[in-house]
Image (tube, rainbow, N blue to C red; front, side, top):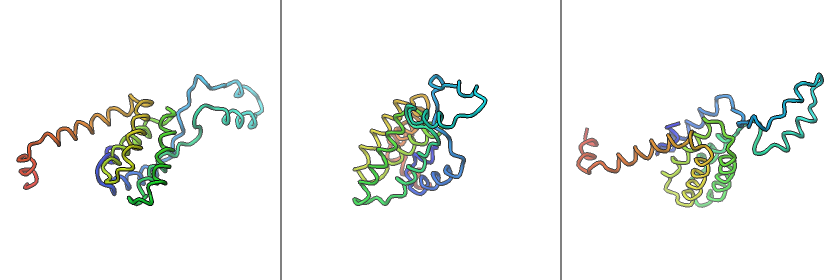
Length: 171
């Protein structure tokens, strides 16, 4: 997922496309909420399972958050894209704050949101920061290491003296 936090739009775009070729992961299930008594029946009861999935807390089934991230990344950076972009960001935020993202997807969301901060399109920044904060709050053990390493990288880069930057650029 480090490619998702880089400044290159094309690297983020193609990384998302590659990630989407892998099998989709389901949302994480809280095993304390599961009722396994229906597995003891001899006849499967599909009606009960449908009703259970409708009353479940948070999202269930296959997680499609990477498709949302790809949609966001595929939108052109222009004023007419602001509304669809913010709408997609709010959907990512809702899924992120549910706390049911698989670890790989939580890391990918956080990295991608950091990558979106490189866009020269300020209407997205507030939504990206808010979504990142809520996702990090729900998935703190999974998300913070990648955010912290990116912040360290940016701090080291910004603390370099101008003469050091010039010397490395001339090589």
